Amino acid sequence: MMVSVAYFVLYFIVFAALLLLLLFNRRRYSARVTYFPHISILIAARNEEHNILACLQAIAVLDYPTEKIEVLIGDDASTDRTRVLVEAFIQNKPGYTCVPIAGTVGMAKGKANVLAQLARKASSNIFLFTDADIKVPPTWVKAMLAGLDDKVGVVTGLTTVTGNRLFDKMQRMDWLFSIGLMQVFSDLNMPVTTMGNNMLLTRKAYEEVGGFENIPFSITEDIAIFNQILKQGYGFRNLYDSKVLAWSAPAPGYGALLEQRKRWMRGSVFMPRYMFALFVLHSAYYPVLIPFFVKASLGIALGIAAVKLLLQSVFMHICLKRLHRGASWWQYIAFELYLLVTTFVLILYFFLPTKVNWKGRKY
Image (cartoon, rainbow, N blue to C red; front, top):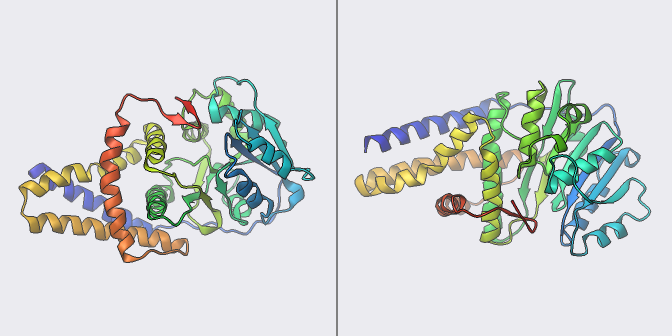
């Protein structure tokens, strides 16, 4: 009982501190770009016939000089119509190239291998990475460039999911809530991670670590290269702003969501200890709360649950407001129920002795 009480006290102190930091320690970066360097956009695509055209159409309307954009799409042995659709779209678009991926380079596998080969073909000094199921906003490039300076090697944007189903909305809130937690640390200049579907790397930083092909294989290749670049002394910036808000296709079902989150949880062990500790503290809430419900009075238990819901909802509301979005009051309650179920299922699923299924391949 005393252990549970101590846990809840710690949980609420930590979360209140995070909320205060979110409110009063926000870093801002100017979206004004005074020069327009050549850039290379790198996209790994494998069996993305349902998403790739929306991705490329979003890139085609970027608010950036067309002649200074190079788009490299790596077709990773797709067995559907991905390559056909890409090649049809890029006809008469001289800045676009579809690169059939054959063989591997160095230690790279899967997506990391595709990106390693695309980076070798890129001609600019700035690499922007996104995924084939992502739609970036027109302001993306300029806003990402605004996060650069001479010391920064990695700039990370913001991604969430589209969709009108309740399941999609819960995923969207989950993404923005988790990234909001990471942003608090980033604004304290404490590195956490990057996201490979919305990431900028300078060529100099990328080449100094030897590229993806010289990094031990990780199913979360973005975290791996982020950590290596920071080890070389480069700085980072994470941007929580609508100008860099990209949209991903949601996980279509709960099975796909579990596969996605298991892959992310595999990568979370490579995060800094303070971030890993925060996720453990957050994930342990329900396993601690439910036994506490049995032992404590109903009023106390419900009070603890209500405080958590309030703090979490305020945090989520601020995150949404900064992106000029909102949610109905019932969605905050639904999100709490979504977290309750997902936390337990994910903990069990993560420890199952199964490989991660990613784009039809198992790791």
